[in-house]
Length: 222
Length: 222
Image (cartoon, rainbow over all chains, first blue to last red; front, side, top):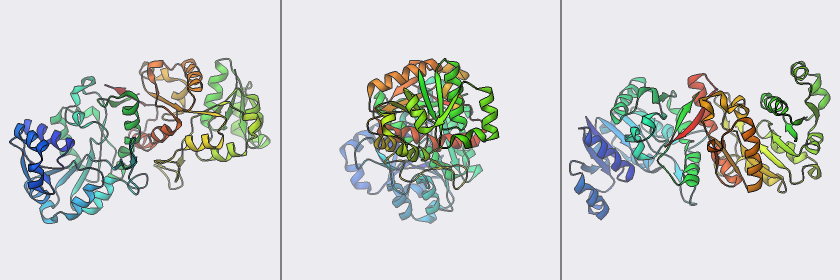
């Protein structure tokens, strides 16, 4: 499949590597292509992953049949707001971002207006009503998102939510390709449930702070 | 030990039953004793648990060497605000409450001003600076709080946080008495970490909504 990954940070790079390894064609989208490819750290990474195409956000969204939002916090909202909506159409957006505010240090808080009575996932869906936002994978370290078998034989929880049932089914197939078992996937319902999954971050960052280990996830036991 | 349990609802009753079964002397505290003992449902429960003493909030706090806050949401703040502080002194408060706002139905939100940049646990500690608030057990159904062995051989997570290390150690011993293994207890640090544990509720209520089963907890896997 042709896939767009928006965001050139750790999360975006991790997705691009995994998607390419699975045989997908991937374009990574960025605000300023020449600035991004001119960065030493990005060049080093790109030399190791030369199959990754690089384009503007619009280029990437036009290229992809599916779009991964791996941008940081509320930056995603301004990026999607500025996109050419013709390119985006009714494509699926896999939203793995979180509304984290690190402005006062660690642990971060959630960004004002994007928690409790709203969420980044919902606000993104409002911005692009024709697209199909599926919130998933945002409750863990990016290495686990695409390689769940790294721990506990893959037995740990990943939530999905979104307004379109068919889009969620397609995203589940993509997740299966990463190694996610169906019994580890929990569909919480519509996109308003992103209020729940994004609220995992305040406890996640504190467990990370207390244990100094980010390679963990939650398993539901009953 | 003599223990005060504030709150006559499900959570309070569950604690009283368990504590009595472990040989503790327990007084349940309520706003209005004659009104509480006059309620049919309470009488039925009390007939089955006649060892439970019933008193005002002040009576109970005076009686207890340790106080369990099993009141609902922000009600706890007004109750502790109105207590005779001489009776409370520097006692340990085991705070299992959550700042849930059900005013707009299910799923509840977190109460304004008591999440993200503050928490119920922190605000309680500010109200009674000489007492030692230990936040724990608030991330699960009350039946599991006092009977962790009900599921997964007791292997699931319970967080603690609070400003006083000795108080946390004493609470851990009480938790061991309920069946909690030390490897299932995670000390997150000071009471500000209640922002993390109380933020578990938005995902908890949605998992409950999706699965219609409240008898579950999270296990950390790595």
